Amino acid sequence: MKKMNFFLILFVLCLAVFTGCGSAYQGPLKEGDIVFQDLPCSQSQAIKLATHSQFSHVGIILFKRNKPYVYEGVGPVKFTGLKDWIEQGEGSHFVARRLKNGIKVLTPEVLKKMETTAAGFKGKAYDWIFEWSDDKIYCSELVWKIYQRSTGLEVGKLQTLREFDFSKPEVQAQLKEKYGDQIPWNEKVISPERMFKSDLLMTVVSE
Image (cartoon, one colour):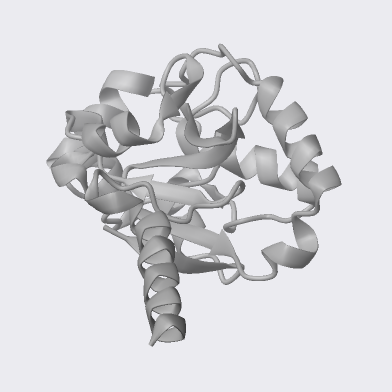
């Protein structure tokens, strides 16, 4: 009976750790996890329509003082507390996806390189016209470049601007506002949707 009680207590303690004791999500996210959400704004709606996606925003989990933060490109590029990041999304819904072979790829040395690469973008302004340069940067571009430059992996296939769907009035309005008549159709871009659908990732959380 004592042995049974011991294992019962151990089970309850483990369950508390992995569920965050019933508070706002504090689950088993790992450094390098990629998190997706929808932001409640007009640009987000246009992004979803143009890319046929349920998500308009993406960030990467990095740890500070042993706690998970979301590193995101929102102008400026910054760390956001996980709870605050979740709550900024539509309905507090988010999905976390993880590198399938992350145990092999994301070694301590690679994670350190990832953190160093990420630090190089800190404070950069948001890129409202989605140029493929490091001068300014948008959310999916930030995460894609951190992964590519620290692991060599391309999480999501790059597209050109002309491959998006511009048939909806909301998208056309954003296009006109950003570019006028000088639309850079051949500009390289990476969308949250392409990253979300990458074969390199698997879903670990859907809240």
